[in-house]
Image 1 (tube, helix red, strand yellow):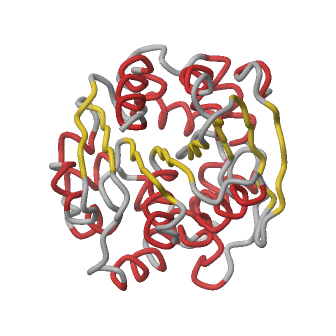
Image 2: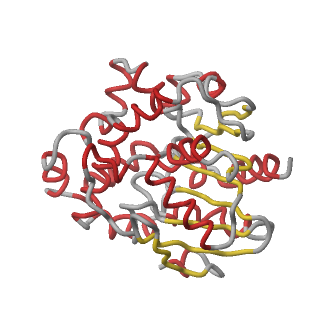
Image 3: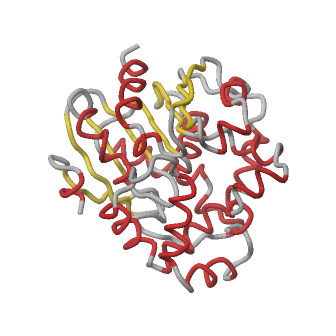
Length: 294
């Protein structure tokens, strides 16, 4: 499926300490690691990856638990889906490819992994771009009724197993389609062919359990890690992009939230919803090329 959406990219699998990571690699030049979010896979980057590959070696993994990467058990306190564990996977992947340092882009869950990676591995991350998120701890600490209503899955998926897993299992396609269409504000931005590929992965009960474990970790052990690093700042230059029509941009001062976490922050809203790379690819590319050429 990688070749259909990502012509010229090579599919690979790399064993890490805790998982087997499926990825696609293409292009040549400085390394650029791009991390997808929920409920997508590495194919979410398909509209912009080929253009980026003209200037960069582009690495597109499926996060552990997602897509065609392995799905380990969550472990005590969901530690295997902590953003620290998920970031460690990607550091091992990049080292296996011969890239000890690199530029980093993350969307949604992938941006949360990227945030943790920039703190845990500051010598590896040269520049970081985060798409349509505010920091996890900030979002939980500032939760109100409107946020909880709009982002209900943050509170649904963290419920003890197997409650959300069994409820989603009743109709995975309905849940997935409602989730994507609720966040995408540019009609048709996620093609039916791409949705079908996301659904192929979402039909796997192990994927759905892993996704819940990812969210459970975010509401527990990840918050502990974030609080422990409350005085630390991301040293790498940070670009924040978000959708003007999305929940994050409407409920948070996105740049202000990142200036609390990083020393060098820039960014702006794009005319889209939650997924700039799918909804507004040309505008996203302009912003990335400008940032990554600094």
